[in-house]
Image (tube, rainbow, N blue to C red; front, side):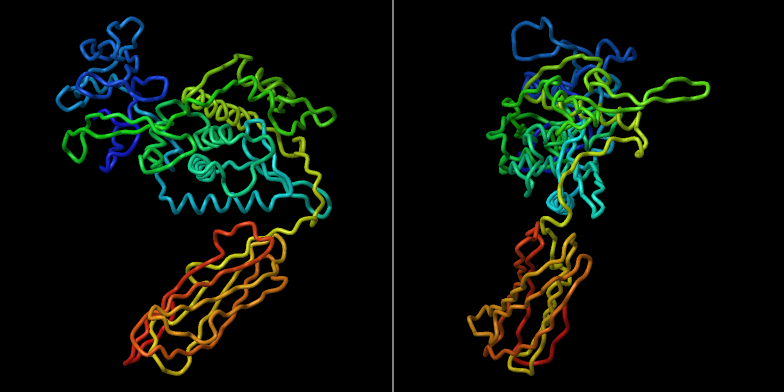
Amino acid sequence: GGGGGGGGGGEPPDYGDLLILYRDADGVPYLTEDSCWQPLDNGSVDCPTECLVPGDDGDETTDGEPWVVTVDPATCAVPAQCAICTEEVDFERINESRSPDTVFASQLEDVVVNMATADCLSLDPAGRIVTSRVADDLTVTSSAIDSPLQNLAIYRQLLLTGSIGTELPTNADVYDTMARALGAASSKTGEVNVDLVVYLNEIMGLTDESVTTILGDKICINVREEVMGIVQTVRKCFLDFSSYDYDRDTNFGALPDPAYIPESAPVAGTFEHLYELGTDPPTFGIGVDPIMEIVFDDVEAVSSNITGFAQAADDTRAVIDYMHSWPLPIIYQTPVPCDAIPGEDTTYDVSISDVSGLQVPVQMVDGSEGREFTVNIANAGPDAASGSVTVTAVAENGGVIIGSPWTHDFVDLAAGLSDSWTTLFSINLGERTKINWTATIEAEFDVNPNNDSVTATTNVKVTGGGGGGN
């Protein structure tokens, strides 16, 4: 088949052949009279001429329309002899977008903690988020967020909510940050284009009609394609990027942010890089030049809608590729400025594991001798943590559990350490029921509330034995 773009329809999506298609300014594919996709001609000299026809954009004239690959009007599939004329989208490492939501949630949590506990946030010459920390000797350690999964998590969360759960660097626009994160997630030597963005949004579940994004209403069409071996009409939706505008010169004229190169007199839009002086023997120099001049040969690019968004992402990728191809040794790099005072602000990530953070009896006999529950918390730092943990037990039959809720305080729990408490309790609920447990942490300077609460269940029996813990 000719692949797909968008989402929705209620059927399992087909990601077999994700072809570059003839699309409009919104990234929505033009369809044939038979409601089929129109794959673009890849320009191969081996493509049979009978496989190509002028594209159909719905107008009466075909003037200026690109060549597209013919499809079978009955199945919307590309004939076997014409497959050589098509081109698939190359996801390379951005293929990690197929990861489950739980993976993105975990990666986003790492990003939030890393950013929230940093002494300074900034943007590098490509627009990636940089976290900096100041040590006691006032040396600065800086690191750009360059993990593909973490950048995909940023992209996904910003599209869904407009926030990642902590403040972005100063002057970091939400839409530009989304594009830059997508560029940072992609392969350095690949290409971010409109088709990749469209397919990526579908794969990540962002185009489903039930999913709300910051882009507002989706653009939906009906298209015929093969689903589970049957050709049928499927509703496909696409995100609306029409409010986005991109200007390459403006974008890179403001990076890195804040400007810090050269160190003696920083100039916005400037970065540092190696360049080759000679080949025999190989010798290199350090260049301090405008990003636009070195990476883009001063070629401007102004575009909008999804085309502009894809261009912004690909430009980020291009700068990262150049920086990795001509990197300065660390000892020659200009340090990222960070004027924070070590220890000035208290921050930590205190958590309670959803696996072992709250251990309660799985089975318990009503009226039997007392049992116990255990609470474990951990502090990832960087500072010592103080606060409390509240454990609540609620019987589903409305009976009273004496002692609930219980509160445990922790004081100056050092970074990297954990602590636990064990408490005895007994029940006399009078019938078979369940006890629903909740343990919740409260700590003033906790930067990540997403891992501060867990639940567990105890099944209460009126006769027989039982026990164990979970």
